[in-house]
Length: 443
Image 1 (tube, rainbow, N blue to C red):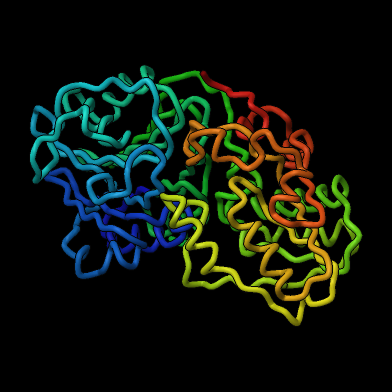
Image 2 (cartoon, one colour; image 1 turned 90 degrees about the vertical axis):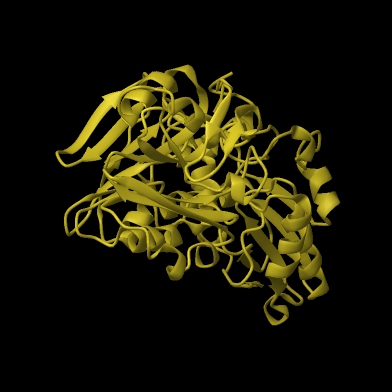
């Protein structure tokens, strides 16, 4: 998240915007705010409310700033790896950087000095953002110039926001794996966000996406763009399936509309003889509404999700994921007892959630439990910003739908075919669906 606006309370605005992006990262949060005279940074562990209390951020002043919520995919969850990461160039200029995704082919030089902290050996600087900052600190020219020289030498999936010399910078990889949008603030100024819902939270008007392979600089003279790579769009379809909020627009498509269409298509591709359609709340609710619409089976709520438990899939360890699953869901017995239930989930990756869901629905008296998944089976790892590191952790690795149904004790289990999912997302090109198909857009 990034904001450039004169006369505004940048730290407060960034914090408000990060609440709208909390679903993208729960482990830590941070802000860097400043102007041409310098940058101040605060980072903390936990949710935005815990990491960014007003007492800790009120000293952050200036007309430009960036914010970040972290979901770890390549380094441990720790304050040392929280973002933004602030550094100082060899010429003495402060800059700060925040990143979403996974970088590959990134050189590992000698050391990086953090502003206000000791030098860190670069080979021990685990996070992608720290390693990139280590390279940028020795580059001449503006932050935009440095990014334009270094990013073509990297690979992977990334969106960056940065602040330096009173200007805001944003960059997106040539594949455009992760979303990034630009908006105009009502009172003057600009904002850049991973999802349009954060722009909405600020009362900003979303104007366009940062294009794949584009660097944007926002300053006193408006918005300036430059290209550092040829666009080869491969937007992660898992954004529409699970990651993004339903009130966001990703790649020009309403996430709500896509998820509803996936549910309608799932009813056609994987019908079930049942009395009730229920979602695994919250992400699958819209797909379940679509399934009910497409099948003619009544929709209802059969599971209660505690609002005080975080998203389980993006927890940083298997133990935390299992605890979150147990704590967040409980059955509504009066709704499911004696009924044949279709339970719709957005995706099944490790099967932690769905196995627990089937068990508690049966304990609550459901006569039958049929699992329907509004995406294909996840069989391959992701190297582009989702924490699916190996095939071994995937329940669909070397298992059929029937075998998975037996494993989770469901009466049946059905997936949405990959080609149908891509059609409903509008078009069979321009997406990365490697975790579903094994066809990677980049080696």
